[in-house]
Length: 406
Image 1 (tube, rainbow, N blue to C red):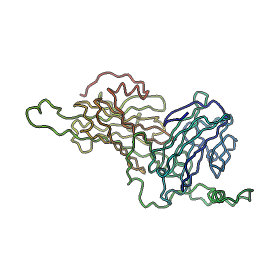
Image 2 (cartoon, rainbow, N blue to C red):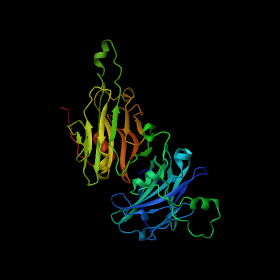
Image 3 (spheres, helix red, strand yellow):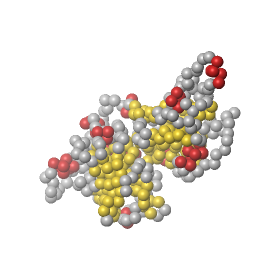
């Protein structure tokens, strides 16, 4: 079957082969697997399987010369809850390369009886590393999640995200000669047997860049150190131009857009942060999400802002950013709503509410999901009659009642 982003399927056999396939390209791609614990981190460097550590000590995961990865689920150690399958571009910053240069890439999963599933990989921009998919335990069984989330920091950012510290250590002594090492590809691999250090300099820091997301596109925020910094999510919009004359008294007096979010914590707690009902959240305590004020006019230059405490990203499972029209007609085209997501060290992400014509009053804008200890940000922009119907579409399970602002 062909999978879409976020789709999950059960894995009904133990031995799998994962292949990242793409048309011929000048980009040099390396695959890897991170065997992580329940906290999203590896227990040690041996749980990072790549070209320099091709065989896990349990025998459960093997990295092959053709960049495919063999997995025997029956031999996965008990401390491992998830296997994150990744792809990176070697020396991407120096070569000025990223995954937007690749078209037609696809992840394939094979079992003992042949191909199980495929997952097309597309809609990437500045990313130099991708979490292709995740194999994870669920109620005693194994499942696969088609992730397709990207990082802008290359292999170094990916390693740091999964708990591996990348340093400028000297490479180990050369290994003894092995048979069949005469191909150019194998010679290149012998030169790269250590984790590449992070770039010493950048001509332009990532924070100065902006990425405008396409619908369905996912970009992961970059960690600086062990946690994310403060994540600032801002909504800004314009008021419709007021008409003059006799009929102006019967027209809308403006639009009051409210920024809000649904959240789900790792402990199962689910709720909403919104001005309606004075549920403004809390930045330093659960849910670690806070709404700053309520702009009822659209005239405040700063718009409305939700702040997420990145220190506690490991306690948050997902966040759905949405807005609803508290007052005024549903004229999304005139409102020209724009959401920006800012996180230290990551490009500014821009999500435009650019699907017009809907008369529905609620719009799901962006979905933040915890992937490997950071947030993957996906543009959604989907309209609903009300918050309750949006809740059902995203399986939040809250009870909704009619409310008003004080």
